[in-house]
Length: 168
Image 1 (tube, one colour):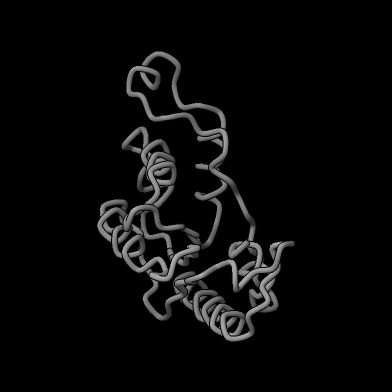
Image 2 (cartoon, helix red, strand yellow):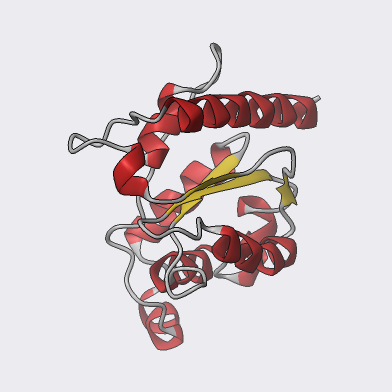
């Protein structure tokens, strides 16, 4: 829901393409050796490599990053020679939502060493950590909280400007 809202609130002239990690299997080095990189991983790698920036929308599970999203990043960084092509120098921003009251601050902090290792260029110009998501979104998944909408819109404008400056 947060990703959908972010794409709708991106500034004019900014295209936000959404992608899912659905279909990415658990990382297994033996599978990589025997069968290569799975098709869903290869397709997502291509999309990221062709993008000007990367917005990661993360929940927070048990005060940390979600295992399935970390698993996807582990696959996306294989083979190691592809890390620079997929992530190196790429502007990255993090936002997140959780049904709990703590926001996603611990998950977002947990992503920082991973993003550093991948060679990304994180944008630190804003933060969006949605707490109590059931109060922010309605049953149709639409953002109904105007304060959060304003914060998200400002965030998206700032990140789009950051990506644009990095392209020059």
